[in-house]
Length: 460
Ligand code: ADP
Ligand code: MG
Image (tube, rainbow, N blue to C red; front, side, top):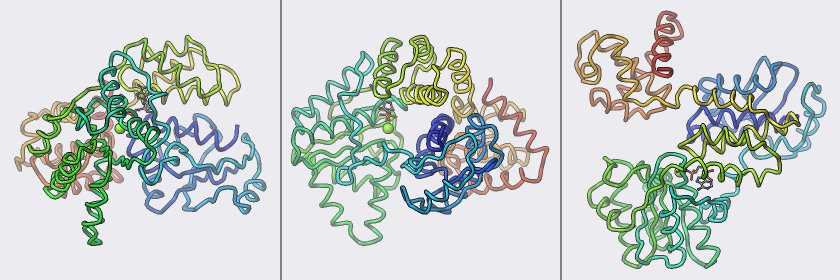
């Protein structure tokens, strides 16, 4: 096995244990820079990433890497732009002693080619197409609506509002609309943007006083696709900008496509005027695929990979991963890589092991509600006392621990945490998080306490 494959496999594993946005933020553009005996150096793009990987994700990295190469004792992160195929690096890798892995020049390839293919003008990723989108009863309607938009953008299905849970194909479907439209009308001006990116653009434009240019740019699209609208900021400015852009496009019969993890009425931060605009168009939800469809999806994904996986293994995956197509794909990728590495088909038992790890992996199944309930039970206080802003001394600590867990394990945002616990602002949450984090470094009892709490949260 080569370093590139090793890292790819490790990443496939890590991807399953951290949230998608975090995975992309912190692991994009990482590579194995060197591997020398027991020590592996991971190259990261900047100091920020280095710090985060070291402090926050090291445990995942260690676990993933050592499950593949137990001889690795130490992992270091180094900032370095390892230019693809640079001669200098070629030399250094060749002179590094070979142990288990063969030196392999392509190890410098971009980690995530998928992300790298994104078209800078449209921001679309060409891998999201209708051709590779599997249709079943769970997404039939949304798929039909999406296709009819390609035939007649700006027609009756405007805006199209697609909603559904994580990993059920929202991004894939809405980007497929963009890609298909460009296929049919190459001159069409299409823009795909996540609501977070859109807000970032607004902030930048405000800073550089280029708001007018941004406005004009956005009002000239034939098809504007906004992903994950539920993250649109509470601030009036953001929604106002979007509202005006929306209207400008709508009035000119330009197509707008929006996605969200829930229907408009269930997005608490959404202004009423935007909500009613969204509800005025076509809404379609993505449900969860049934067993047969899950199996078809697996087979379809496998076609691209030129490797044979036993049907029995596929069955097992389809049986166990029920409500997230991204996870379905993640497990398949892992199995494919394992099989390639070992050069033998992966057995049913090995698959079971992977599935077990995944199904019992923490962080997957806890909700803030569960965290709050578990922690109040643990300290024998009422949930109400815990989440209220009461200053009673005996509440302060459990509340800080709750904030810590919400942040550290569930990756909730600080504003969200502050709001949930006593309607405090985000600085309170940050303070609590830091306090517990620092204390954990020196206080073993607290560490034990937290371990018990986590066990209850994630295994019961
Ligand atoms: P969401 O945006 O709803 O969280 P994504 O669109 O990112 O989900 O989908 C997650 C992964 O599952 C992607 O890799 C996507 O290609 C794949 N996927 C989702 N739905 C389908 C489908 N119907 N057919 C094939 N692949 C799918
Ligand atoms: Mg998405």
